[in-house]
Length: 438
Image (cartoon, rainbow, N blue to C red; front, side, top):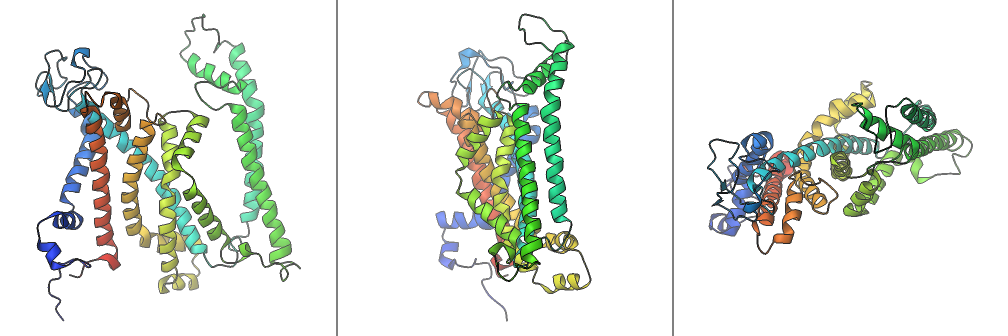
């Protein structure tokens, strides 16, 4: 049987497809993401070659060029660092201190891509791993029966972490005292120190004494956190040992039918944690992390990684729950394949398509989150030209120089919209249930 008009997408009529209007444009962008692909290609080019293509220095400008409009030429600007660029020409104008907006926009593309790629990489690895474990364990009897050494491993890990915290708590003040006594660092601002490692040693000494510096967390607090993590692991291992001894296999098995002993304890634990994490406001969590660890690029990467992993868990879990019921997985179990081998050899290739789609859609959210955090002062700090920083710096001059806000805001909008279109297109192409009839 031959199906005619196979190019018509499911759920859309021939009239909507053929009429040239907003509906047709929307359909064309979703089916053929040419324009989103061009925009994202320009973003990648700007991220890779942006600093080499920027016509002006990103942090240097002429004060007399402040608030220069778009597509204007100034006679006060310093010569461009690129010989092929017209003298004094500012494509997107200049900001409130005379810096070229176009050059800062190119540098900001690299910062955004670096932040997104690192945080998305960390979040995808964590989210895919937890989602696969949760989906594979769903419906199983117990989670530690697969490996009898899990409980022992938890107990030993807790003991090792407690010892590490004890070593940190005892040795770091001693190291700090030695640093001060041998003269590698000093807290007297009037003394000139020529040792090239003095700055590092001073900060280390301050951290060891618990005073902290520049918003950094002190070593005693780190020790307490390590103690807390180790204690939780030891307590959890002891509880699991008691459950295994008295409830799961012991005399209390018939009396206690607890919910976490059946139906996949790890699955329930991971999914409930994800539900709780989704309920927490992102901005509040980000501000708390910044208050504890201070501002900086590493803290921003950590915050974005915290919000990126949850989007993978649910989707991957649902996909694994479907795949593990297939015949080839049962055949692998019959052949004696370990659970780890089944996960990475047989189930992991089956979730690549959905993981690519989720990653593409999550990228737009990460770019927007990075811009929001930089805008409120909890992310990238000035004078680095992150797009959120540029928007924040220009909001005070919105009435006299709107291009300072419109240019970076429009860049964020176009990139996020293009990523959403690309994600929808990948979903339609990679998901068999969403493919069009051809």
